[in-house]
Image (cartoon, rainbow, N blue to C red; front, top):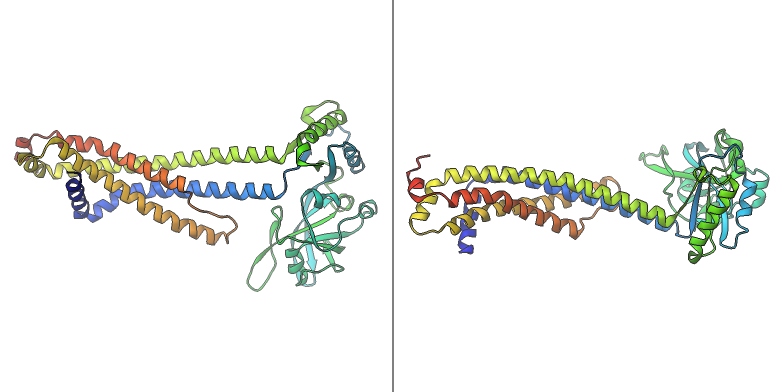
Length: 402
């Protein structure tokens, strides 16, 4: 009986292809919205968490929001490392400058720090040396560039010994980082023939940063690395205690954030975002379900005489109801399959447009949720039309003239 009902439902669906497609359109759009939006949210989450993980898990970010008219000085950071649970501390400040070398110029993100920064961030040098303590003490005009920055400014990676103008000041390149791009860099136009864009970034002594940047005078943010991952909690407690003593027990004057806490916060935010986007997409599917119910009611009215003939020759109420229910389910699932296929193509296009900056892929869980929800909508919104068709009396159905 089920096979016969399925065959009849398929013939009914194929008999009016345009109407069937327009009915499926609501489901198709709803599934595309669900799969694409949730996949984009998951891709963004994965990208951010990977970046955070690559930074390492055994360091803290300390930010000062209120210095109590007693700003933290660079020389005070060495005192924090006297604690046995803290290995190193490095200040961090950022500004944007114009970098120029020969005929190439562009905007560069400049980071003021000390030599400990590379160790804390697990960064390695491909060429040259790190920032020395003497560079910090003498306010030296030296800079470490990323590989991409060196390639863009000079045409080759090993640019150690070259000079680059940063806001008109001449800096000596002393090192090249062994990484092609940085998450904190900003995009600039390099003026190449192909119009490509490159992320430029440089690192200079913190003391030099305070001289060239008008808005940076004292330490407002710094990174602290724990002696090991096992002592991370102890390092966080020790850092909080030292900062409380430094700022008169005012907990609002500073924040100490660990990478694990940052990861948990990001996951919580992105999970909420995914649920919200999924809810919005689910509303689109519900609208598609209303469309299915509407068309099925029209179909029941149009096929009243067919229902009467089937009942007259012995078809039971269950058989009639199953036929129309399967028909509604078939339309819903066909729309779901088309929506999933379209979503795959859209995600591929987004990936190419973003130049693989983020990875967007359809999670099997999202696909199954889309299939299950579409099937549920087909059954729920097909139930009323199917029941209406099954309740028709044969004599009334046969008399129906349309």
